[in-house]
Image (cartoon, rainbow, N blue to C red):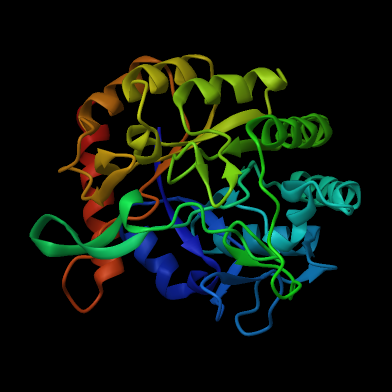
Length: 353
């Protein structure tokens, strides 16, 4: 097992590389997508941009040159690429929405996966969701009033429709004023996901790239009129059973699984570690379950993280774990301090597992 760090595009620079090395981290999970707040409560997804030199794309899709340059830069700084986390929303908006450009986008995604495999990208994380991460609030929810995120279904309108031109809580097009995304049933979201996986997995397997599915967070049954795909552990089993390809794996988020109303996080981790179905792990802790939960420090939540580490060890997991996100510690560098605390705790658990 290896402990890694997740970096966003604006963090791909010498300062963050040095921070990772000083923590004893070698593996990096990278978000190449870039985000800006929009004026309608969502986010604008930028798949290309010149301000930081990353995310260069052809028609919105990352290329072999982008992947290879990223890997080379990490390696020059003593680091390795563990995974790319998330497609850019504009790259697969109609795949998620079942729109008219679905097959055109899938063809471009296949080429992007071929380029990724040729460049040496081992894994691509994704979250097949129409509403995406929505409804979170920030507040002093962790120990000592540390700022973290929480969810309370009673404090939001969970049925608020999604504006036209948005998916995954991000705007990919201007959209038509007053128009909204039609409701999505359980049957429809599973049909769309199945089509996506059966199209993309043969290409991913051929070029040696694993696709890793993140569960829904918040793991509601439906949100904003759209059914959720993986909001219970057994639905992870269903997702894996769609296609037996070894490239069909899970981005196993411990916090999201614990937030689910049913199932057992320990049994879930043991099963998928034993079956070699884990692409990589988001190693984070929470208090509570839907419809009300808070993210907390890795050592204060409902999950026994030492037990999780032992389960992974016993069942032969040899992959990468990252903190994902963590409460901010009150100081001049809250993100850095929070990550350093989480990774130090993880390293201690690993040493004693």
